[in-house]
Figure (cartoon, rainbow, N blue to C red):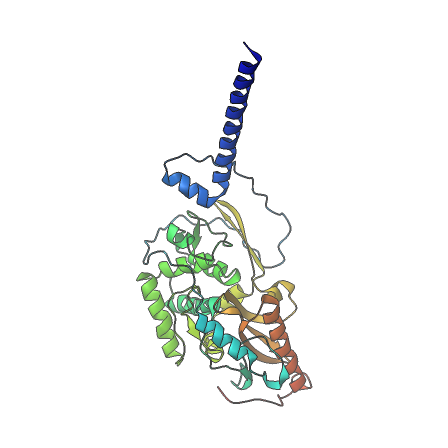
Length: 366
């Protein structure tokens, strides 16, 4: 064979080898890239899946209330509504929040929150307010009303339900530890939903309610009317919808009612949970840094965040021997909503002067 012919054969062989390598690389890329995976699947091609990684669970001791129990058998509930669309950020909400945020804060507190409210839980006296009647999206503060509906319904808390596709595929729920096929009691779901602000848990709670999610949401709005809330409306139970709206003043009324139930107080203030399921061990951590740090005497709390609602927080605590409820809506970051809370608390402590004394400043009654 001539030298020229050998060179041609060698070149063709190398080209085939390179193309084969590219084919393997493409298969690996497709397995990692969901867009490429979808295109390949549409064309009828097989996509090589990457090897599953072993999950390592930390053995560090939990700092809060620990729950470790084998869960009850499955109780499947049919879906009541189709899969929800992703949360929508409404430009008008952003514009309104920006305008409210720029308004001067009473007492020169320089809050980043668009709206804030603080009142004495024992006598109903308003201690501090900033744009407290502005109707805004409230994100996962919605779950306070969902928990209230569950507690008022007097349903069996040991009844078990299984996570289904419609619970799993909620938008903005990727942090949830709940997986399809896992089974939890109604009590477990309430605990997970309040401690970890878990959308899948709350969705399953609402889906398992008599009449399904439509009946659950109607009960949320009916409860709001019973409480005399004129600027509160809910469209779904998790807080993902920007159309779940209320005011800082009215969310404290929901919180005051929710505070009457020991389970809501306990479950919202747990630092960390552990559950043993057929799918393995799952851990749920509080979404509130103040709870994890244990710095405040907090009796109940709830955090929330969406693009439309910004960073929100409600908490119940004691200041100078006074039980107070505090709310901030649409703070500019997680850290800033905590800073806003601290500024309100510090301000009130200064007004009290002496621990347990009467407040020197209040605005009006509820």
